[in-house]
Length: 451
Ligand code: ADP
Image (cartoon, rainbow, N blue to C red; front, top):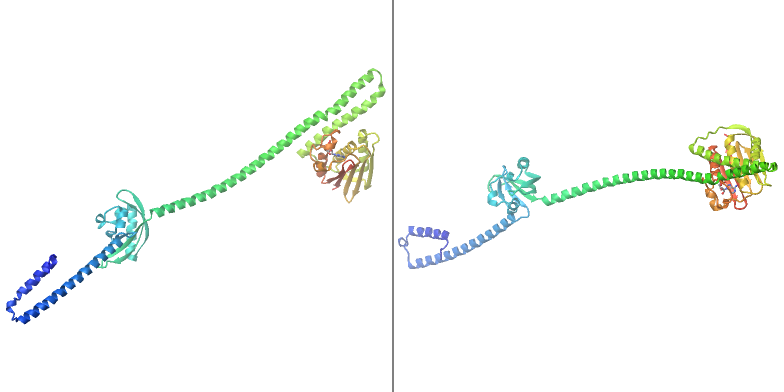
C-alpha cells in the first residue's frame, strides 16, 4: 500500500507505534495462528482500502456540490450580500462585487454604507435597524457611489435570519441595479408630462383659434360696413352725376330757351318751360329727399309721432301732387273702405305712398290705382299698375338698396325708393308685400296697424 498522502503517512506512523507497543514476540503464536492473523489483516486492509475509496468519492461529490453552490451564489443575476447589524459586509457574491466595482477581498468586513452619500447612509441605517426588529428589509432605493465616482440606482430588499452555525443575526440582502428601469420611468414620466403639456398647448391653441376667429369676424364685419359705406358713397356719386344732372340739365336748357323766347317776345311758349322746370325741380328734390330719408333711417333718428287725420283728404292731396308726373292719358283712381279717420304718422305715410305711386306711374303707361281699407284697427293700402312688371328671378332683391331690375334701364331712378319704403313700413310696425308679373303689372300691398 502506497502512502504518498501526508495524512496517510501520519496514520501509518501511529499504527506502527501501536504495533510496536505490543511486540509479536511477546505473543504466544503458532504458525496457524499467524496465518489466520495475516489473513485477517489482509481482509482488513482490503476493507480499509474500499472505505478509503468511498470516502474519496464522497469528498469529490462534496467538492462538486460546493462548487455548484458557490457558482449559484456568485453568478446569480442579482447582487447578494450578507450584512450584520452594523451594516458590515460579511459576505458578498461576485455579481454585487461587480456592481460595486470592487474585489471581494476589499469588501468583506467593510461597511456597506461606504458606498452611500451621508444623507442616504443615515436612512440606510434606519432601514437596517428596522429590518432587524421586524425581520424584513423593505424595498429601498439608493444611489450607490462606486469608487470610480460613477453611480447607479440600486434597489435593496431582504430578510433577517440567524447564521446557520452560530447565533449571530444577519441580514440577507438582494441588490438590484435599477438604473435602466428608473431611466425608463423618468422617460415615461417626461413623456406623460409632455403629453399633458401638449394637451395644454392644444387647449391654448383652440382658445387662440377661437379668438382669431372672433377677431376675423369683427374685422370682416368692420370691412363689410366699410364696404357698405363705400358702396353708398360710390352709389351716391353715380346717382349725383347721372340722376341729379338730368333735372339740372332740363332746368338749364328750359331757362336758356325761355330767355330766347322772351327776347323774341314769344311768351306763349314760356308756360311749357315753367312746367318743365317745376317738374325737374321736383324730381331733384325727391332724389335729395330719398338720400336724406335713408341717412336718417340708417342713423335711427326718425321719430314716429301719430295723429288722427282723414285719409280721403290726405290721398286727394297726394294725387294732386302726383299729377305733374302723370303721362298723357294716365290717371290715378282712388277708392276707400271703412272709417276715413285714421291714426298714423302722416309724414312717413306720405313718403311711402309717394314712392309707390311714383314707381307705378313711372313703370306703366296706363292708369294707376290706389285703394285704402280701414278695418279692425288696421289700414290696408294697395297701389296697382298695369306696367312693365318685375322679372321673377330679380324679385328677391327688390328691397335691397340700389337695386334696379334689368328691364328699367331706360327709366331714370336711384334704386333707393323701395328700400326706404320697406324701412318706413317696419318703423310703423307694418308689413309690405307685392305681386308682380312681367309685362302685366305690379301690386304693392301695405298693412299698418293704427296702434
Ligand atoms: P327706382 O328709383 O329705380 O325706381 P326703387 O327702389 O323705387 O328705385 O325701385 C327699385 C326697382 O324695383 C326699380 O328700379 C324697378 O326695377 C323695380 N320696381 C319698383 N316698382 C316697380 C313697378 N311698379 N313696376 C315695375 N318695376 C318696379
